[in-house]
Amino acid sequence: MVDLVAGAIADPVRRQILEMLRTGPLPAGVIADSFAITRPAISRHLRVLRESGLVRDETVGRQRVYALEPAALDELKAWLAELTAPAAEWEHRLDALETEVYRTRRERRADRETNPDRKTGSDG
Image (cartoon, rainbow, N blue to C red; front, side, top):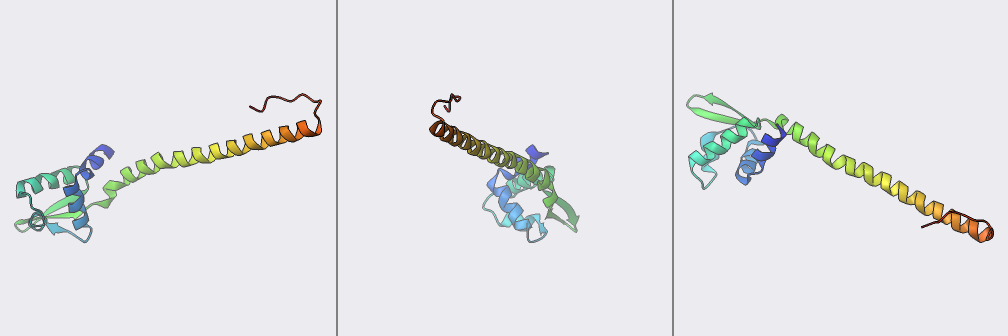
């Protein structure tokens, strides 16, 4: 499902349609009138959004009305959170390791200065 949603929002026209629907449901004709492309092209964009689960449609009289389904973004949001969170966790761990390396080097230098005859390991 993430691939469908990501593919759907990859197109700038579809992103604009989603932004329009943030304020509430709109008839397909109103959506189409907002763009300088053909109605069949808008219809294809709406179909992609519907198939990805980002919008739902219903027939009201002779109009097809589209509404935003923000829950369809949840899986993508979770994937993005996972993608970014581990990097932050590893960055924190690497920072801690760097601090420990510097502390160990400092202690070894201090030990060598106070005990010059004592052998210590390499401080690389």
